[in-house]
Image (cartoon, rainbow, N blue to C red; front, side):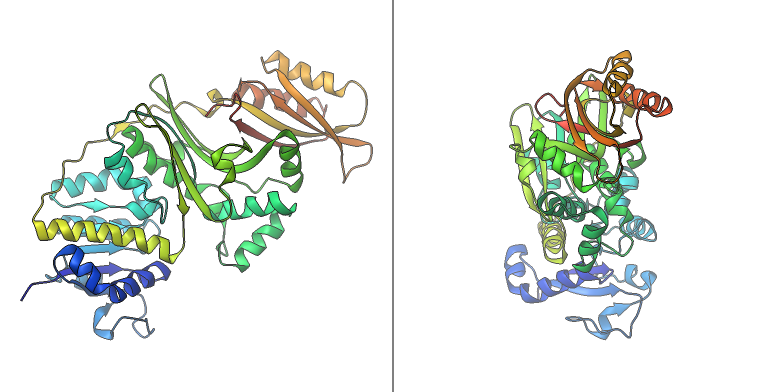
Length: 433
């Protein structure tokens, strides 16, 4: 009798349920693909009394020690989420000689280099395709298909919740609070949406991508991060007037050996491919010396797309186990030399509420000019919520963010303006990519 490849899972939430359903529904096809049957042995859960579709009571356990001591388990799939105890359990599974598949972006962003080194030490593999793009294959292409390229830049929309919200704000003129409530009602946003709307989730994913694209170890806290909670409906109206839309872009590029990395709302020219990535879709654009620009696009979240990526890793590991293939050597990451955010160069969008009187624009232009920031265009609109006030929308030529920040601080302290509404970089048409 052919022995099966044993799989145990940590967690059985929405994604875990999708994995279990697929393992049961496609068991014959997976067996033909691997050369042996796949056997789901144990699933770590919090509540044994809760009934779970596709699982028997004998497969459930609340003890990680019992699961990891099961001799028939060869692959451990971690779908718990969060940093702890997921990090500890992944490390213990690797140290025990098991291959591991994870969808955990926080663990991989903060501890990926250590875990990959631990896997190499114990001659096992750690795969994490589902940690970045959900159903979009991006980890594997960067690890293998684009390996011959020297990657110089990557730009990504890698959070489905915020992309859904920004698309709704652009299409319908909806305010932030209303569109967040709608995203929560539809299940796209969590009750506490901080990780998504403040850019933490995208920062984790960008850190992982930088390790693969550039071979650099980048920690999430080193990434310039700004969420979408300060955006107002008029920002989308003004952006459209200028020929742009607004996306939460995760961007990284190499500049003379230094890494520039940011996650922030960005104006992107409406004809750019990424400007057309709407709703809950995600996309990653890679720039390589041989391939040029290549774009990966697809569903970035949800039980079924994420389960697809998880199971692709499981099947790859199962094939290696059946063929008795040894894991490839892991190249250690080099610590990234991160350029401070004040030195980031871009064109910028600035929205200001100002007194509706002569001479104000000249004062603002003077403060910007003193720091080498040149104004490219000016739009003026009535301020809906203030009497005798106007909204100015400025775009700049290429400038350092620190210089723009300093000028805005001076403008605010000198009371040239009543309110600084927003500041965002502009990508494309002269913007830093």
